[in-house]
Image 1 (tube, rainbow, N blue to C red):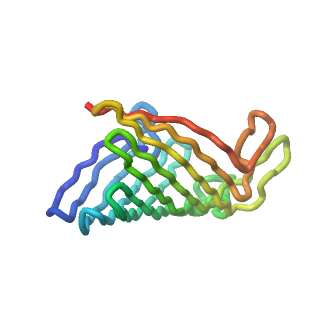
Image 2: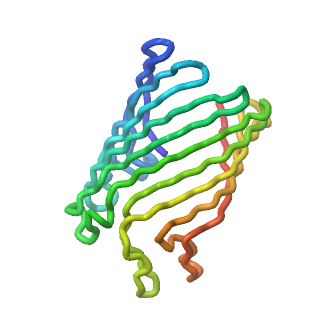
Image 3: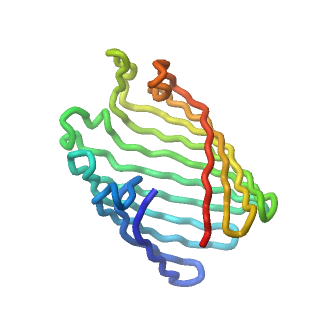
Length: 212
């Protein structure tokens, strides 16, 4: 999620370049002073096939220690049938030097990469249904709970499976409910407040988009 400005230049009907400024990762204007570049290119082979590359380069200054990061993403989109859309994304995040933090080591932090896949069925102009499968691999620092270290390995696989819908009751409003299941391979990442650390979690929610 980004806040900033992005410009797109359509070189021709098939090739486009885009780039601009954002104020960091997962930040809004009043909570960040970061500066980052977001840009890339997209090539549309046909109405059913496109390929897009994007990169994010910046420095995170909110943790007390300046931390440079570099994220890149390759997206492949195809329309196998009239009402179906399939998207494949590969993403990579650079490694963070252990010198930036006195506690975490390079093994604890590590790099992150993963694959995201989405399949969407457009039933009609008002309704669409989709499924998303995610896999992320990366290092995180060990967690502790009640004085015990629950995770001593630095490498971890995280999986996510989501089912959702998109409802457009009027032209200017889109409502998107979703239910998802997340699982960590080694970490006990969920339900810390209740005192029952778990490796998996079932959750749900919804988002809405207002067009103007």
